[in-house]
Image (cartoon, rainbow, N blue to C red; front, top):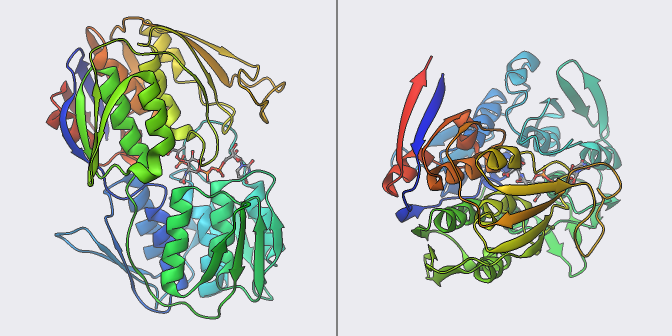
Length: 441
Ligand SMILES: CC(=O)N[C@H]1[C@@H](OP(=O)(O)OP(=O)(O)OC[C@H]2O[C@@H](n3ccc(=O)[nH]c3=O)[C@H](O)[C@@H]2O)O[C@H](CO)[C@@H](O)[C@@H]1O
Ligand SMILES: C=C(OP(=O)(O)O)C(=O)O
């Protein structure tokens, strides 16, 4: 089934949306349930594709996953964990990036893991070399198999001293999920410390793990033999919250994002204020709005936490097309995250992408031919057009550009948006967006 959105732009998005648990935490907390000897309960679970994918993968491995019909809370019981057929697992090839995180928990639970080829957003090469090196350092044996990789650990997993070449979110989580039940102590140097990682550590601590995060990106894990279940409310999705904030600015609207958390979004909020966005920060959410005046351009660099999160970049770039003057955005996390600007240029935006590092600090991608810096001159009116959505955040950016544009846009490939935005068409309708959706088989 595929759906097409026909958007008639020019309506300011106004109203309230609710943001639930983070896409970048919930599926990983679900994977962590495999490490326990008892059922775990995960609350604030959004209805998004990545949750469906991980539910299916866990069920294939014998984990019982029960969803409360009223609250949506998940109870995950790993007591009957078992090996799954690689053909069944293979059906999930290309669906998401989470399967690689099953390695450690599956080895602890059943002694081996078959991991299908990964999916996720195509915003760079996205290798898994750090993950595989980490697993090998724990004593795992990694073999390439048709359609994926097989991992085993004939002598179990053992704590190790590990140093990451870059503070990768996924590789840090790989270490956490493998080390908590490994024998001995693990020291991880150069760890990522995103709020979703800290929330995963909170989950593991509830299960009985001993993990300390030090001031210098070092995480120390003292392996324990057994873990129990957890009961946890997932932290809210700061990336979805920031997307709605940009949507308010781009469409000259006013959106209260229930669930938006100031603590996890401080860097975004500073930037939003500098662009000229209005905000009222409440206890249970944040109101984001266009203040009526001009928006200001800015110079911005994406970075690992506590820097400006790369997933906030794409929707904000659309807002920068409406700022008075020249903005520069240097993407330092992914080498290929500006492909989405091609559609914005067709809509009338003035955006040039460059190979050079147009930022204060040269990044890993300088001199390597990657178009990873953007110069945006505004303000430029946007016109509706036909768009095929390329990736999750790029797609959301296209949607909000179409919602702000004059005329009609026809948007295909919208199913990708379901990977990270719960019920987004319902939310858009609630905010007053003018669109139709047609679904064909
Ligand atoms: C499901 C999930 O949580 N996704 C998030 C996670 O992705 P993910 O965990 O995949 O991102 P990483 O932090 O690992 O990637 C950061 C950089 O490290 C590189 N790298 C990573 C692993 C590896 O083995 N080798 C390697 O070279 C990547 O290509 C990228 O350039 O963190 C990203 C950075 O905050 C976010 O944009 C994603 O939304
Ligand atoms: C890049 C993203 O996600 P993933 O790592 O799941 O592809 C994202 O959420 O913007």
